[in-house]
Length: 239
Image (cartoon, rainbow, N blue to C red):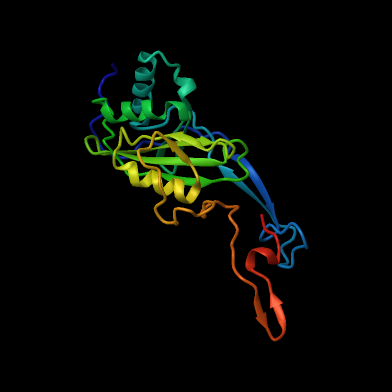
């Protein structure tokens, strides 16, 4: 096992240089209108949507030690670290580990149990929908806190919209029970192995997941002085 990490709880030193941001989409016009033309006057505007790229070593501060120990533990399991940790990102002074979904529970257990890591507390699960991130449209994030070492990092796991499954980590962090249910309810990520994956906000028979970016806005037609105004999501199309 590696030597213990520095005991200091001070923030990380300046991290390594990140790779170029990953562009997942480019929107044209002020609101991304793509059917009847842009009436905003910003038709020539182009906005790139990017995600942070992979960060190179050294990551800075205690970040390198955490990744080194995790890689040692994975190797001891007979796993290749590069096939488990998809990439390491240092963004806004926060360490983010992108984990291949099949190995999420293994990584979470090591982060919780190893004496030099001891991320005992998971603050829940959040889901994010990136429709343009082809093959990785759904992201689940897990903020982890080490009470022992006063450190914070985030795990991130992706899955395609066509196969929206990620293993549950309720066995490792029981407090995630309700959070995984809410993420399934509103985003549509299925947490395999969850003890009771039922809706938290929407009725049990509700169809769809309302926090997805492509979820229809809904509404009803409104009649005003003989003219009918259609619902918001049918007036014109936005991306």
